Image (cartoon, rainbow, N blue to C red; front, side):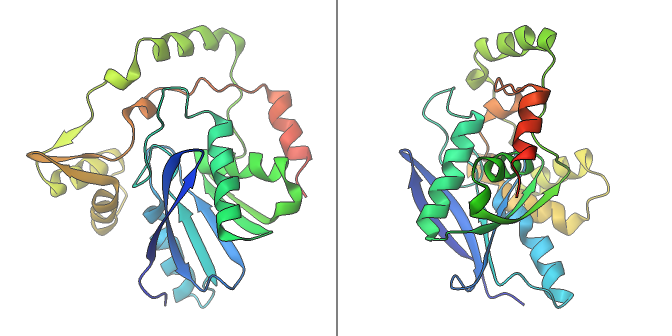
Length: 228
């Protein structure tokens, strides 16, 4: 089994980002990228399961995307475009001093992993996508409504608030009823932060709105074709 994970930080384009590290950094590295409104410690259960089956990842790194987990929020509302997330992945690879990585991504993280591998096929040796086959392609008629939502000022949205950590875990259970109680408690522990009189989610509330970063179906396919 793994020893206790280490919390690490680095700077990407002026934003302080957090990642969690397991295993031996001298070994082959698997970089794991979580989904929207999630955080890196959600990968703990996958790592534990692999280790229990005798197939631990020698060195695993779980990034908290900007605006998530213990990473800082972007300085402006335009700081969460696809290229911002991809720049952070590239900055982390440089920080780790790794010429090649295995990328494991879930949902939004899977989209970013696929795009990164499409941008830099020589930097990625293996690609694992969970509930993701690349970013969504938007229909033309959807764009004005998505843009209008963003322009209304999503940063003004009140963050979710819970009196206790157990209440935030119950909120996860309501949304994902098949998730075991101990997993809900883990996700609440690492996904929420203590504030005056209670807890709120760590992620930037802007992520409750759909992204204004749009790609066509042809552009998404172009990334897929570049995979090596």
